[in-house]
Amino acid sequence: MEKFKVKDISLAEAGRKKIDWAEAHMPVMMALRKKYSESKPLKGMRIAGCIHVTKETAVLVRTFMAAGAEVSWSGCNPLSTKDDVAAALAADGASIYAWHGLSVEEFYWCIERTLDFKPTLTLDDGADLIFTIHNRFPELAKTIIGGTEETTTGVHRLRAMGNDGKLLYPVIAVNDAETKWDFDNIYGTGQSSLDGIIRSSNILLAGKVFVVAGYGHCGKGLAMRARGMGSRVIVTEVKPTAALKAVMDGFDVMPMDEAAKVGDIFITATGMKDVIVKRHFEAMKDGAVVCNTGHYDVEINIPELEQVATSHREIRLNNDEYTKADGKKIYLLCRGRLVNLAGAEGHPSEVMDMSFANQFMSMLRMKNEGAYMEKKVYDISEEQDQEIALLKLGTMGKAIDKLTPEQVVYATDYSAGT
Image 1 (cartoon, rainbow, N blue to C red):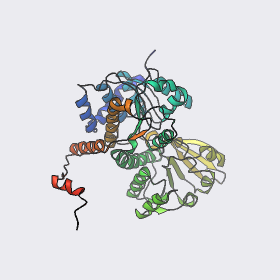
Image 2: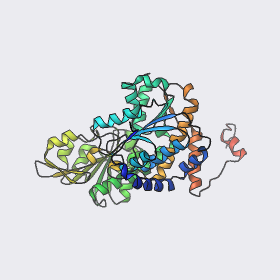
Image 3: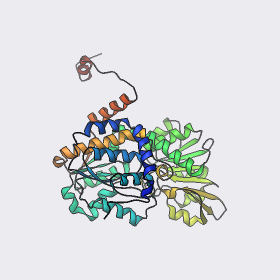
Image 4: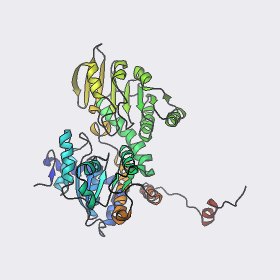
């Protein structure tokens, strides 16, 4: 049996060119590859990964392989796989099961195939791989040392599992690293989601009312970038402190029931289901554009959108037009899936450089320490966070100050007065 299934293996050369571009813009990852390609510290490890198959992910996969690991990969979203990149990985010897446009059944079939070689480490984006192991193949957990999780949604769910004593092996929350969520989530999501909106609609953002649901790190990046493009930004929130931050950052804040009446463009970034529902669709004005950049497609209640529509057609790639009984139209982008990946290319390579460096370093930590760790979710160490940030600064030609020995002492000297 072939150890891959992709859309079209003949796309491999085009995929390699994209990977070459990413490698040229991911200097931290390339430094790690160079450092560990001789010692091969991951030799003997079998890494099963379930994460968006993009050119940046390919750099991570290649680096794992260079460090000695066997890998088997699937996409973590039915619409996020870049078929040429998947073909390039397959042609270059990686085990990969991923193609754009998966059905739900195919999606889980692909995940299951990555488990055929009985992994020793897992890497997740949304925790679907870990949930598949726990729910369907718990016996595999006996030989799994540990795993990592890339996203806010996945980390929240895995922490809940850990708190309930249901987690079968330790997991490192890569998402919670400062060098991940303060860069990947803010700058990556902000830029790439607007990229997906523009590619899918070619709509002018200047002068539009842009509604951001959720003011976490992703929502913050979205609001900042939309304002920079000339939009008037409205934020909807359920958390008082997050809403207050949005107000202090200069954005309007109101409930979605109010925002639905005035918004031109809506994007959800909450990780919660039913953020935009039937009554919101009914209130929206003609031409409203609706999309999602949260991990799952449940933030926009698409069945209820279909209920209020009298007709539906795909009007352009990744853009579905729904006409209501009153003749007003709503445009749903990327079927409610991640607009930045389904409609564009995902985060720029430069920010994924740090996120995936955290993934790589976390896999090294799990290989060395996982057998002794409790079955719970762990944070990235402060030392790793700062090391990766310093490496990134160095690749950008930036230097910083260092505390003197006297300053180090002073920082914890509680006897020092005014």
